[in-house]
Each structure stands twice: as structure tokens, then as C-alpha cells.
Length: 127
Image (cartoon, rainbow, N blue to C red; front, side, top):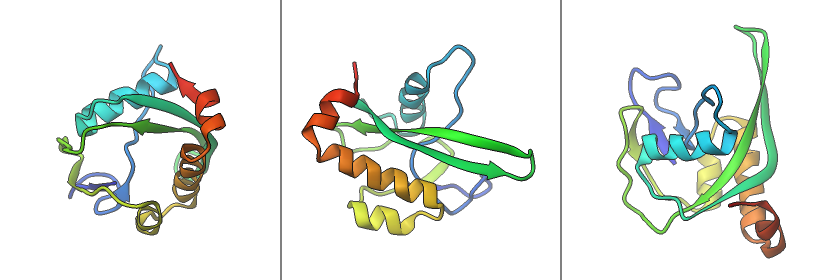
């Protein structure tokens, strides 16, 4: 989990790696890029979680649909960019308790279900 830095959108909130998809970029490619930019972690395995985090943004009157991914790394040292000022490796329940948004909590729950289901992992691994 990453804590948003002072002066950044969602300041002080704990979050997962997130970001926007660039033109001509696939969602899973954006995931890998954002992980690299925000944590500098090398990803060993990447999975598509069968869950879409959706929410309505009233300022732009738009509905956002955000795919959820599960990334596996053997590394533990995070090199954060300026978007965050703290990170922690957490167990599932503690990670969920730090999140504010229901869709993010559900995304973690669904990721953990997938992580512990060998058949789902085989079907949803991004090669």
C-alpha cells in the first residue's frame, strides 16, 4: 500500500498503484508502467482480476470503469516517486481496512480470492 504525499490528489490516503492508460496502451501495459513509475518494482507475474472497479465522478459527470490487476514480485524494497511519501507491505485485512473506497476494498478481496485459486491463476495470467 502507498500513502499519497502532501499536495497530491487524495493527499494522506492509502492506495494501491493506480494511474491512467495512455493512448495506444493496453490496460495491462499501463499497470506495469505505473508499477515501475510509482515503486520501481520488477514484476514476475501479472494477472487480470475478474473485477472492475466502477465509480461516478460528479465533477465531470462521467462513469469510470477501472480494471484490477494482481502483480507478483520477489522484491521487497520500494523506491517511491513523488506521488507517495510512505509504503507498507500489509496483510489483506489490514490493507482493506486502510482503504476508503468500496471498489478498492472489493478489488483487494477479489485479488486475494484469485491468488488462492490455482485454476483461476492459470486462466487469468497475462503472458
